Each structure stands twice: as C-alpha cells, then as structure tokens.
Length: 281
Image (cartoon, rainbow, N blue to C red; front, side, top):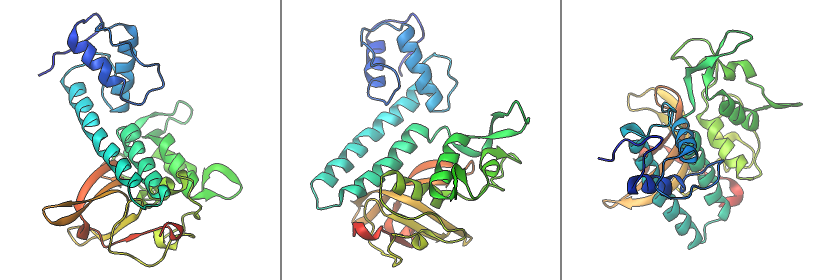
C-alpha cells in the first residue's frame, strides 16, 4: 500500500506521484519529478482530487491513490483504441466521437451528478445541480433554444437547478443529449435533438438500426433488465472480442442513480441496436 503523502513529504514515492500526475490533463505546468512535495505538487494534487470528487485537501491518501490508479489503468485502453482506429479503414471522425466522450468521462465524469446538490445560488438560494455548467453545455449544444446561444429549449433553470434531491425532473433525461453532444463536438455535421424522439430522428443519422456495433456509433437500449422502458443512449468507445463474443465499451450519460457519466462494458446483445451518422458508413 502506498503511503499517505502531504506537503513536505519527500522521496521516491513522491517522485512516482509527480510522474503519474504529469500523465493527466491539467491546466497547470508539468511537475519537475524531484521527489519533493512542494506547493506545485500540492496544487496538482488538489486539482486531481477536485476532478475526482474527492476532498481537495492536498493530502494524497488511500482514496486518492485508488482514484489515480483507476485513471491510469484506463489510459492504455484509450491508446489501444486510437491505435486500432489508425490501422483500419475506419472513418477518422468515428475515433473523434469516441475520444470526445471518453475524455469527458475521464475529465468531468466525477463532477457531474445531476440529481445531487452542487451548492446554493447566493441570489436565489436555490440548489445548483452538481456539474450544472457541463449539463448546460450538453443541452445548449444538442438542444439549443433558437436565437439564444448558450440556452436550451428545455429551460435553462430546469437543467441548472435541483428541485428535489435524488430527482432529475424537471430536467430531461440527458443520455441522448450527451451522446449527440459528443458527435457535434467532434465537428460532425448533424442536426439537433428532437423532443421525445431518439437519435435516429436527428438529421444526418441513418434511421436504420444496425446490430453490428462500430466505434463512434450510438448504442440504444429500449428496456432495462426489469422490463422498464428506458430508451437509453450511449456512445460506443470500443468494440472487442472476449470469450468468443463481441463486447462493447460505452460512455453513458445520465447513468447510475446520481445521473452521471460512466464507462460500461457489456456484450453487444445487451443493446437493442446501434445508430451511425450516415456520412460515416
């Protein structure tokens, strides 16, 4: 087990931590791996802890080590997927869609929990949704309010503010909104979300469902394991073989009880089908 590190710590474990932090995306300069836990290392630690929804106290203990290990373990998967895309005839925009979704999960997934409070607005005393700025980005890009850049026709306050802890409403379910945001952020020319319709209704998508998943597709599942209608969408990040079966890695918005972004690995048949942007066929 790695030791708990804090300001003033020194030695090879600190050097290892500094090297690992340098592999993560950051708004700060790269650390000099000198083995000294100084103010620059502490600032990077706090930045990492905040991104993983940990207490940003600058003390690198068991929870921080576990979060860092998980993050680093996922890096090879991202690199392997990028390499696979480069060595096939896959349209490059497919890989771009997958990478946009992956990076959003890695960098912001721990910050977006749409059914939890993200603090109180000083002016209105209403509770923000946790990650409301990212949620507004997804909604304003995928379902924009005509003539009002940065707003959504679903109602900005519905997206930003929490009415009841643990309840997403009146905010709309945003799995398809998130999936379409990844496509549009990858600069793929497609239309905007249509209320009460699935991804197949978006201009630019092939309305015909496929049962052969490909990277950059939007996976669709109509019912959950209890037979409830969920109409869930997710971005296909990778497709691979395991035990003689095809498996799919997806990045899912509006996932889990807290309505967050998650990475999931499921057999291909878990999904009812897959939708592609027509120009990427």
